Image 1 (cartoon, rainbow, N blue to C red):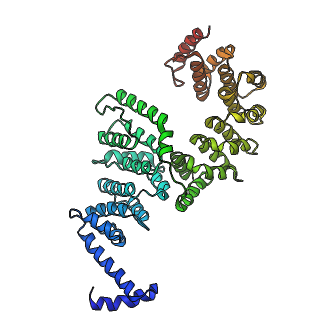
Image 2 (cartoon, rainbow, N blue to C red):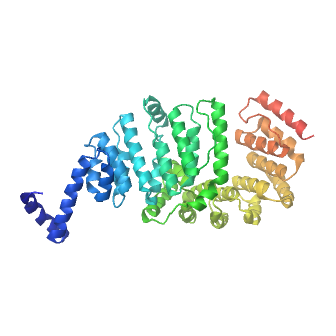
Length: 458
């Protein structure tokens, strides 16, 4: 640093920071040395020297749009390794930049994701999950077309999942299984498979060049194995959700559930289940709010997460004034497997709202006992809503009353689509057989299936 530069900068630094001249001069010299190192970042071993210097600002400058792309990529890696104040925010800015050049944007985002993989800061978990959404909720068709036009594919999603798994957000494994199910871009499948094997230690095979059916079967095996062993990984490396930034961002996303923006709500649907039980306290707070929209949406997401810790709050929600909130609370109690709610749910068979009664019947069909059969039969006798009738029939069949099988076959033949789906699932479950049918089958095909099922229940 020249004498003239020193004479010019020191008074400004002293006035701004109130520090001593020696301290500020040393800081300025460190910045100058770090800036010189960053200009040589492409040289072998230079990233190690930059990280050892511990000065972040030149790296942040090197990631600005004016820098060459290769320099920006390497600066992102060095930033992730160095960490510290401002590192995560600097990496996030790389995701938010759009040039219209899909290859360039994809490469930049991938290196930003690599930076986060190295950073390992749980404060940014919400931000990383948010950036997993590759389809614009405002224009899904255009976004998918843009992806197909891309000549090069950079595995941003796989790299982001890698970063999340490194934080202990183990539900991100499900996103990698979705990539295994893709029908194109073999490189995507390869990277997803590599991340799964490295992070989980499992080594199930995957046939990249097999038929679509083979790949789907491999993905099914991966999904079953991951779900069977996920609790072990959670116990070994849990997610740390106590950082102030994570809490603030989680509160923001949960607030989207009760807000007016449908797009934000859909994004929250994606973010919160991946983060899993770490979001339960924030969702419970929304469930207990005075906002009926927030109540029902929080119940929906709590059901998708399936955390038993939410059961107490969901039981209280059975008494809410909002019909939809009560209905979603009953459904969520079923999804979290809370059997202790059974007496409260039995009372909901007499609820004023048909959907609540229907979900109460579904709960009792799955988590109830044979003692619930008389109550379900009495509720069925007075029920007039067709969909709720279908739910009560399914519940009675699951509770061992095979006399209702004929009525359920009729629902499958001529009911509404959702009712046909419920009837088909209950009939196949109790019979212990698969018909190979679908609720979307043509009427003639449904007639054939109903006749086949009649033989099952003779």
